[in-house]
Image (cartoon, rainbow, N blue to C red):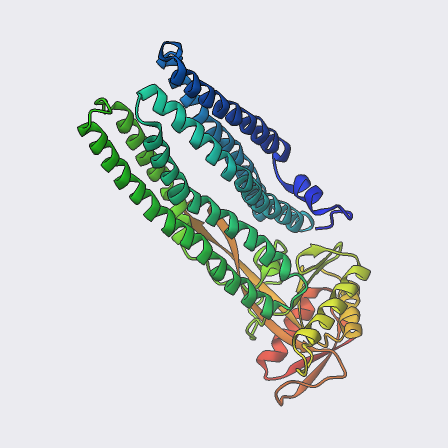
Length: 443
């Protein structure tokens, strides 16, 4: 998506939902946590000089709660930002207008991914500040040794929670870099790069989750051991079970609430022939093509519609895209034969003049082996996304005069202007292929 020459920070601010709200919340919470840390240090020095001047226990409890609430408040705003980006993405996937489809998906993908990386980048230091301030005030409120409480809380934050957050941040940041790096790559290599890149970046997230799970377990064991030792020494008083019980119930509720998300992540998706065909919203001629669909650049054409790989383009922009993709293919495949294949998705009533415009651009840019793609729509059910449209694709291969078939077979000459619409021409191309021939399209 074109951002008009904006710098990287300006682009992030522009595409990220609630960007300024997240930033403002982070600044307010950060300042508040620093103030609470200063208050904790001041109260500790006062208590050391004059125990009678120590602040009341109720105040320390409220300060501890306030320190813990800061990161939670920021996390809530970050979650809202991520949710808005995700909602944009889902709205784009469900859109019926082909011209807006790609723009909506790109906007949602940019917002969704930038919201995660941007939010986590701000949340990680706030969690460290808030955890430290909460630990100091909680130690004073419970009259437990501050060092022990600070050690246990630091162990939980550094060894337990931080690996989760850092792993998620690195995963989202590397995924953004991956998707930006495949722009302009031919469809076959793009699919390989994306699948392999997702597997590699997923390892970062899995590693952070594994380290965090072990760290939380270690923090729990160490915390229990400290409490037992301090209790035997008479340095801590017995406490009630209502607070741990509430925490346990909250954890169980969050785990149960995440069940649909886990199911969504574990449910496999059907194989995708490419982004432009997966998000297609153009009805094609009701034909079963005799040829399998091979990955190639996709041009979608209608009487008032022209898309290149799913994005609305003018004729000149489409020509430029095809030239760029062809040059990139040569750079990425030195010494290999040029890829001359092009997929044409056309609405059944598309006039021959529109098809000739596309075929002329294909011939000019060296894509002399066009194929008509035929899609049959069906639906799949997802745990959280509900019913999602998908397409089953077949094709019918053709030629532009000047090249021969890749395998020996008779050639059938077809004049594009002899057919009133794309449905008639595509049907004739498919009929030629079923007869063991290949159509050569003259225009």
